[in-house]
Amino acid sequence: MSDASDYDRKAEEYNWRGPEVTLGLAYAFVRPGESVLDVGIGTGLGSFLFHEAGLRVYGMDHSAQMLDACRQKQFATDLKQHDLTVRPYPYETASMDHAICIGVLHFFGDLRPVFGEVTRIVRDDGIFVFIVEDRAPAEEAEYVLGPEYTETGSSVTMYRHGTEEIGELVGDHEFVLVRSLEFTMPMDREGTETFRAKAYVARRKRRT
View 1: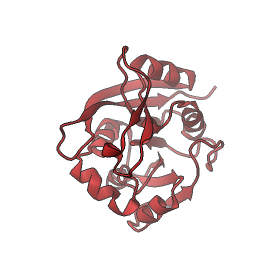
View 2: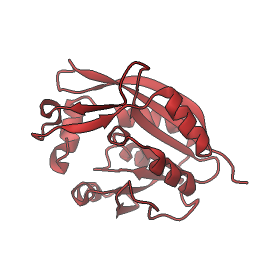
View 3: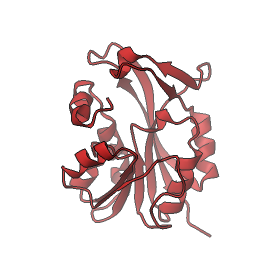
View 4: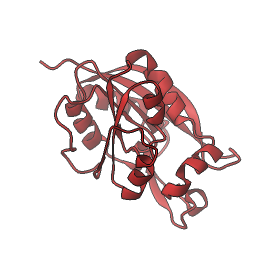
């Protein structure tokens, strides 16, 4: 689902409910008028609901095509093109109330660059809501998703992240886990193939 013109349509066909899960978990911790940074905003599918809830949405993504699709929806306060693996991100320290990252982290084997920058950018007591593909103890962290699922004619490397790993990562980056929820993500339109996803809400500790 990499083509920007088809991204939203395919997400609906695949019954992707990450945006609803993300806002549902975040709702008790956010307020209208606050800012939220969407790390890997894509077409804006994930953060549009935050806009509808009254938040000011800022977004960054490496794909100019995706950003153009998002820009056409005219809801984001600001959009920036930036590679998520490159630090620093183009935002000032403690400049955002909250951050979200959905539909992205399963492409990253090492989540520390993302967490390091979110830690810097999010204000004290702000939340970071993110979704990963969950990893059971017996599962490999890395695997290859074949072209029959990517619809691009090529394979892609994917990464699972287990609960213990996420707990350590959050603690190492000045956050505290406050909520989590497991759900399934479909891999095809029929929903016959799925993988386990887990959404987390982490709260930024106060700076000392």
